[in-house]
Amino acid sequence: MYYYEEGNTVRKRREDYRYYEPVVRKQNTPVKRTTRAQSVSRAYGFFLVLMAGVLLAGCIVYLNIRNDITAQQKEINGLESELSALRLKNDEEYDRIEGNVDMEAIKRIAMDELNMTYPNSDQVIDIAGGAGDYVRQYKDIPEDEEKGQRKIQGK
Image (spheres, rainbow, N blue to C red):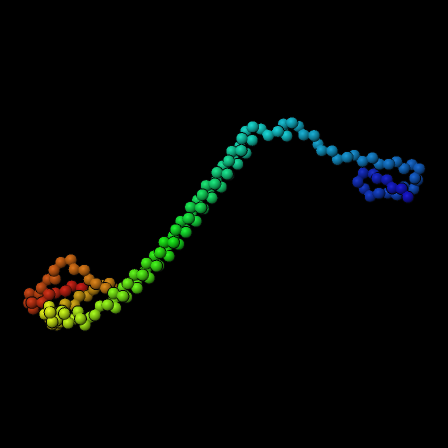
């Protein structure tokens, strides 16, 4: 049984094999391009080289900046560990100093040797301070002329 091709359709059966003619197919040959389409103009080639250079320079700058950031991060980590070691050492030294202070000895020396006494109630001035631990005095406290006491103006 012989078949023949006609275009791109399905093969059809040919009854008479004597009239069979082999079908010659054309080979797919690429379309010939013109020389202008194949070549790249100088301006476009220069642009491509320039953009590749810009891209390379950008990558180098990025890597340098990233390297600097990494180095600074390592330095910061080292300084933070040094700071925590110094704080620990400082706390230990403070505790050692506080442990060596004998408050009873200080009280005895102040009262016996320096003749210091506890203040009377009329010598104590209550100052209404803010949220801080201490109050700064920028001028003398004015005295109340009637009672001979100092007047305190709180905040």
